[in-house]
Image (cartoon, rainbow, N blue to C red; front, side, top):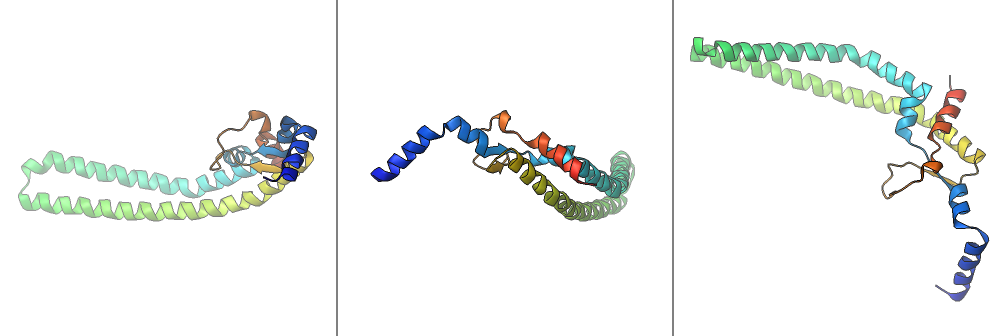
Length: 171
C-alpha cells in the first residue's frame, strides 16, 4: 500500500469511528421471517395451503390404501399360491410406482407455484427494505443466511421494521 493511501485510510479511521460506521452502514433482514410474518407472506402461504392441501389429503389416503394392501399381502401370503402372491406383489408395486409419479408431479407443481408466489412478495419486500434502509441511513442490507456472513449483531436486524413497513404498504 502506498504511503498516501495509508495516510488516507488512517485519516478515515480517525475521523469516522468504526462503531459509528458499522451502525450507519450495515443492517440485515431475515427474508424467511418476512415471508412468514408479513400479512402479504401469510396471505400467499394461505393460498398455497388452500390450493394444495386437498391434494395432500388425497395422497395421504392413497398411501394408507397402499399400506393396507401391503399388510394384507403379508398376512395372507402364506395361504396363497405363489402365482397369487406374485400377482398381488406386482399390483402393489404398480400402485407404489403410480403414487410416486403422482407425488413427484405434485411436488414439482408446488415448487413452481411457490416460486411464483415468492416473486409476488419479493418486489414489495425490496421496496420496504429500501425505504427502511433510507430512513435509517443504512448503506447496505444483507441477509443473515448469506454465504460468508459469520456474525451479525442483533442491533442491526431490520426485519421487524421491514415487516411493519410491508404490511402498511400492501393490500
